[in-house]
Length: 143
Image (cartoon, rainbow, N blue to C red; front, top):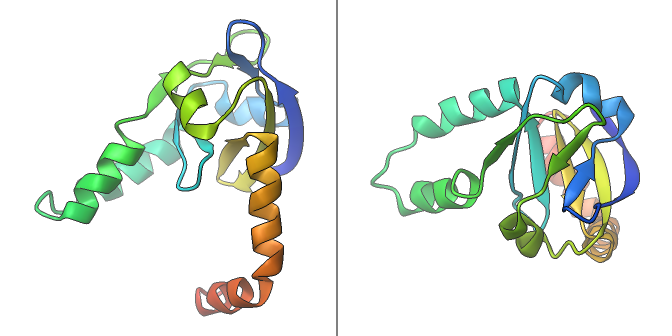
């Protein structure tokens, strides 16, 4: 399980240091891609394989399925953290998420999100302001 919030800075080569608490689950490899909001998402390989399997069953005749595939799979990069727990964040992903150098890394149960600090604060503020609606929706999902 991934949980917690961490502030990290990309190095001069655009590498992100994975928080130490997340490294064990990601050391065998990971996939980094665009998130649904303007953030990046990091999946352990097993979670990525499960997501890809579900997505493969979507009908290619569906415009929504094609758009989803372009967003998620078109921007996906597989990586293996180095001995210091760093992974390169490709320029196209940094641009998508508005990440210059500072990042916020958040554990979100089965995956990790990487945000620019401003976008992270905006997402938290939006969640706080809409908490009643969010709790009602999550309740309908059985949580």
